[in-house]
Image (cartoon, rainbow, N blue to C red; front, side, top):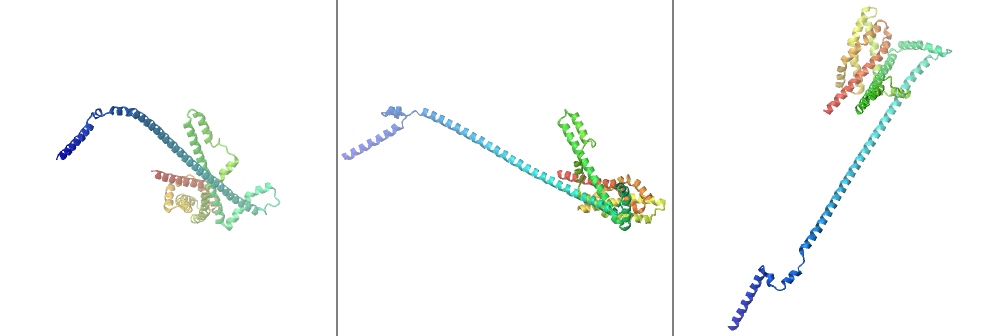
Length: 389
């Protein structure tokens, strides 16, 4: 029992020592109660200075990283600008290539049209000269050049009368085709001159807006530019301008004159002469009134209908054009044809009336062509306005 009591005392003492150690460690003054604690404290490193150095190092590192990031961003922006400039340059180069190609194609087409027009005009003129020379070759034997020139008008008139007896519709169709072609060519030349004058006027107006201080000098320049008398051109430029006509449009006018106008009016004059003989003086007035009311209205409508058919227009568009131009053409015709038809029905024989009308009709075809072209421009402008709105 004594040994058991001693063992219990030892265990109790050990337990108390353990509790004391735990209490000591948990107390705030634990370091003061342990030997060499001060030594350990003195040997502990200075963490405050190390922390400042670490913070400084991290700050420098962050600054370097930020500077690198800024440099990277600036480099990326410069690269983006360079790529954008490259794309713009590539687009500009592509646009320039397309413009140059289109310009070259237009120049090629214009040159080709010019040569084709020159070939057609040369063929027609050569055929007329050759036919006349061949027909008159027997009559001119032994004559001097002056005698030939003196007799050319008489011989040509004799040729015309001979062909009137053999093929009246054929010779009248040929003359009407030439007349309608010449009238449309004159109308196109007038339109080109108007377009050039408008372009020069627009250019001079722009110059006046840009430099107001030199307005007087610019105005003088624009006046000399838009003045047809002051404008000068070389013979080659005049020839190129004369041959720069719209060939399909001119050929359509030739077809109207040769295939439509000549046959219709050949029989029209013969029928009206049989119905209202020229021996009765009052019949001339009847034919004049008939010509300037029903006949001219029907012919103008037929003219635009035939042109529209050749041009592939829709019937609705053809009818719209006929109704839009009917009254303006009637008024224009009354300024020209009554005076001309006084001679037609009062002086000219029936077989030569179409020839006389064709001579006057050169001017009338110019009016017809200009009226039709003006209506077409108006319709195109209306369509453009509708698309914009």
